[in-house]
Length: 70
Image (cartoon, rainbow, N blue to C red; front, side, top):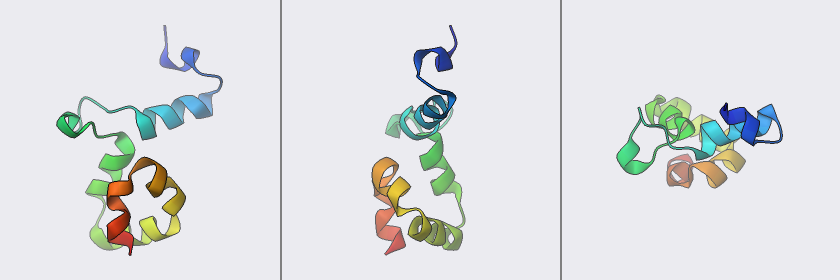
């Protein structure tokens, strides 16, 4: 059975996969999600700008990065 069959829509499936579900090939010891890995690997200047522009996503799914955007 496919992952998306467990959710109401494809958008909810993608959100779960990218923002909530830890990925085994990333920092599994920290239960890192693809979104957190994306932020971690981003150039620091670009990351600060991204954080400032997308605080709603950061506060909900990667609050450990909020201090960088201040």
